[in-house]
Image 1 (cartoon, helix red, strand yellow):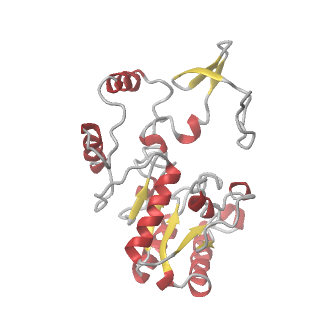
Image 2 (cartoon, helix red, strand yellow):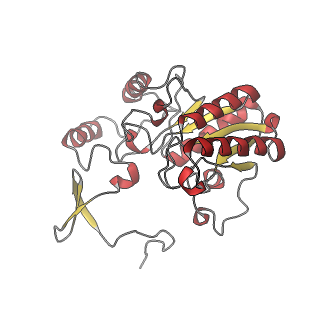
Length: 269
């Protein structure tokens, strides 16, 4: 008999047979409160009636419109609606199937646009599990275990995690920006650095918000050196932090590239 690969572990023994709102149910109709929300995905809960109705309606109209072949009306509508909430100047959209793919696409875009190869990520980062995204992930060694060598050209700079550093927030920001300057001086020269990727709130790395002063410091250095600033809002976007985008807590700060997924589709690719 075939079986699921043992390489991906389940955090619980629950076998869900249905979902409703914030709850999952197993075959015995035992109810579980879903604190994970599908790892930050099901923003509208499980099987929200309006979502179910829209899916049923769409399944009778068109299931797959491959957008390098044909345009379809729902894609155009989504692009229009996203334009209403995206930061100023971010008006060009590219669709993928998952967060990891979005990060891979952002990496390719940054390298094409700048003609540079290197990227800088920050300690505790999680950007995905595909080969390029895994190389940019530092939240745990398990994401890269036994698959090396991973993609070269990734440098890691400090993240201002004040609690772990034993510093005040202001001191942590100064420490992280000094560390970034050292990386630019010793590991990844500015003229060879395509982009800096940062989560406005670390996810897998401990749910640590990036202080506004840190993100402002990244923006200043990116502008100074012609480096693109990428905000990974895959987990933090679509209202999960209280604002539509987590970086909006840093007033007026706009990235060059923004990646998002998860809550965007509340469980659908």
